[in-house]
Image 1 (cartoon, one colour):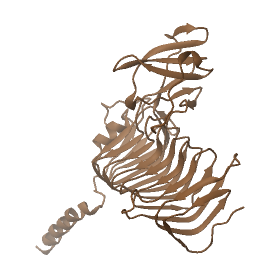
Image 2 (image 1 turned 135 degrees about the vertical axis):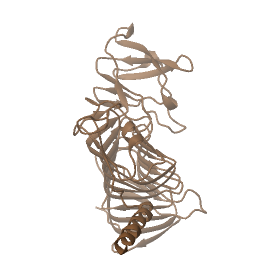
Image 3 (image 1 turned 90 degrees about the vertical axis):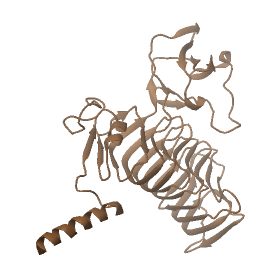
Image 4 (image 1 turned 90 degrees about the horizontal axis):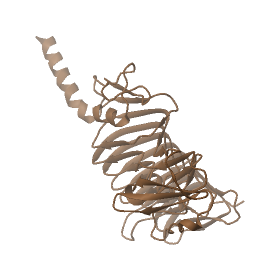
Length: 372
């Protein structure tokens, strides 16, 4: 009788603890391989699924999704909609927002100028890759983004897009059309709704019309490890609303903004590098942020770091701990603007940096910024 009661209370205790974040004993592994898989498969290593989305839809709390083969390119996106306790082990896979365009079927308008009819892209943003090199024609999501040049003014390896109607348009390309890719997907990894305890590791995202990693919704305790977001029309990584994210080991380059965290977001970057972006390398205008053991290498006309509260009434805090900000391949200083809130600086090293801290309450823990 005593043994029966002990077993009963042990089962009750286990059931009560599961909602607190303990991994269920039935946690499963899901395997994805777009080269040999099918979403009709069971998702085992010998019978993998074809898409990450199918694995996410099937996964439960405590499950791990494994991407195969190692280092592969997936022309896919992944979206977590109100999910809890799921891990993606990326195995060095790259999510790619672009698809190859056929080398045949182009209409030659004149010598060296070609066009083909395509569906209009989401958000009417346009990224074309020439031999793997991303070209945005100087366009960004900002209000002062330049218009495409007239078709007859296109130079070699340039393009423009002219809308035909609500669903289609003409893509014009000057030059070789044998190795082109056209961005068609919006985000690499995205969240929405209420998400908790998600882990994404060893995954890269490139060539998306919006963000490589896009966190929306009431999402807490999200961990990203060894990721890269690059060559996207908007951000490599962005957190919105009340998101709470930690990023350990990240590369963010070639985007409009390397990262941009806003609203009530709380984000913490460790061992990350930011460089080669168009507008801002690091933009932090949420609620609570930190950069620890990070490097900002400012190589373009973009601002290196812009941080502060969205409005004067909002609370804001930023920790810069063992951070390096420097320029490379440019004479102009990197621009840093801390617009307000509480900023704690602990071992910040700067080289050729113009820093504006007007309105911010700055506390220096160990050392003053240094210039070389």
